[in-house]
Image (spheres, rainbow, N blue to C red):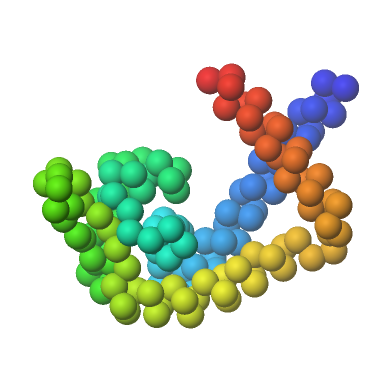
Length: 143
């Protein structure tokens, strides 16, 4: 049983690596890296966000966010908005150009990602979600 558990772990890790690389290759076609895409996707779906909170929401180091927002700002996709009630807080928000861009590329990216799961029925997909959550929560509770 222990060998099977180790094999399951390695299979999940390899699958995650391959999915991540496939996703990176997909967004590279849009002249973005995966972190830039994640920021645009977050702002697209959740609206403007405090820059300090973006790292937590997309699971990257907060020290990298300023750099990523700078790059997206130079591309014309994101703007900084100062909070009127707290000068320490700065929001990142999509520009009109950024909104148009992500509205164009997100459906294409989503379609490419869903292709990975073709051949799985609804029950299998739900099992995959449930098992992944269960293992993830156990791992999170262990550190």
